[in-house]
Each structure stands twice: as structure tokens, then as C-alpha cells.
Length: 144
Picture 1 (tube, rainbow, N blue to C red):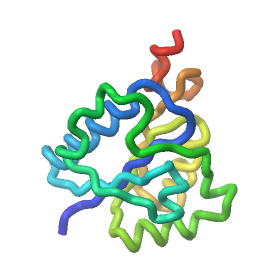
Picture 2: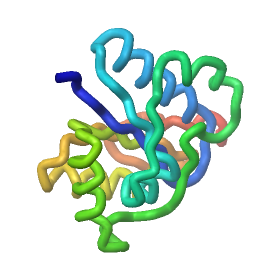
Picture 3: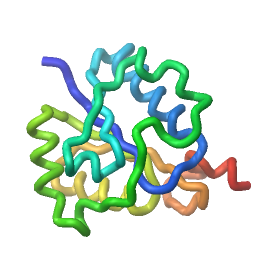
């Protein structure tokens, strides 16, 4: 069975989001043979099951586009009693792990998911560069 990963972007837009999405998709599909599902509108898309398949072809030509091809939201599954919906969506879609790209709120939700046994990788993104554990976040260079 093929490994299936999800990816989402959450919080405010910052330069570099589409580049990160493209890098994840190309590496996951081309190098590892994984399937990649993109959740639209961040955690909101996970809670609502709003998902698209991402392939090397679907991420061609996105580097020059602003924002994020997946859209974003400030939804937090822990504030909205959405954790069970997140788990159900992952189970229904056969998602083995999720990659989150976001700032403090996104990383907080990702950390809680990880503590509950959901395999999560967090990619830090914030123009404020205020996340611990990293020297520079995606988006920070545009705010300097």
C-alpha cells in the first residue's frame, strides 16, 4: 500500500508557501513514491474534508503565484472541537501523516496532534520570525 500524506497551509500568507508545497510534493511523489493530498483552507479543510490530490504536474508553474494554492484559514481544531473530525478525515482518506506549514497557532495545533499520536511534520512560516527552534522562517526575509 502506498503511503499517503496530507499537507496544509494555515494562518496569514507569506512568500515561499507555494515553493514549500511544490518541494514537498515533488520530493514525496518523485523520490519516495508517496501520494499527497492538499487540504484547502488549512485546518478548516481538514475538518471539512476539503481535499485535492497534488501531483508533480499539478504543482508545475506555482512558484510565481502569490499566496498559497491551497488557501488558508485561522481555524484551530482545538478551539472548535474539531479534533475528532480531523481524526475521522485522516482515517477516511487513509492519511498516514500530515505536513503543516504555518505560524504559532498552526504549530501549536500540530504539536497537540503529535502528542495524541498523529504523525506530524511542521514547517515554520511567519514573517515575524518568532518561532523557537529555527533561525529563519518561511516568509521572514520578505519582512526585513
